[in-house]
Image 1 (spheres, rainbow, N blue to C red):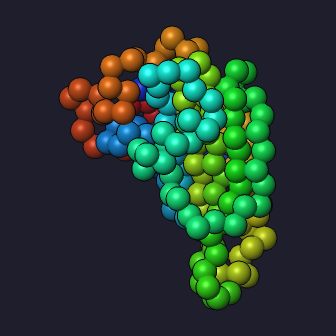
Image 2: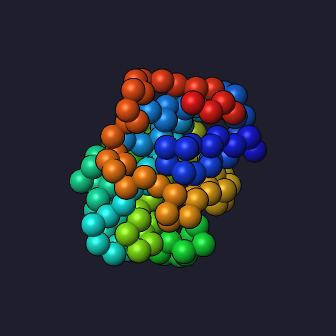
Length: 183
């Protein structure tokens, strides 16, 4: 898969059909990639904490920073594992269903990882128009978990700047880039 390299977050991310994604790596506290044809979005943020953290503290910090939606969700899968070589990570696969089968279904693969004083947050979300799209939703969520999240690469702990990691870089305004280009 084509990869996007973020110097801001010291990470690289592979996305299928790379040139179809629009990536904003400067105007929000997270890298956000959107794919209009599938109504999909990937959000990734890496930030330092004031104390040693694990997955639960990183999830709480992500929710506090409004990086991920709070639900209500139906949990399809919830597991803990080591990702990125060292991160204590919780990976959740979630679905938000409408009140009837004709309403959109929204699925998420969320990961919250902590290692020493560093957190990462990953949220892949995708939408299908109604319950008839369940199979497509399931396939996208499986792909996001096994390929996009599994292919996320975060650089060594010392590589992220410690000053204001949530703020856009100085002098950088809103900017989007097609896949494969570095801002």
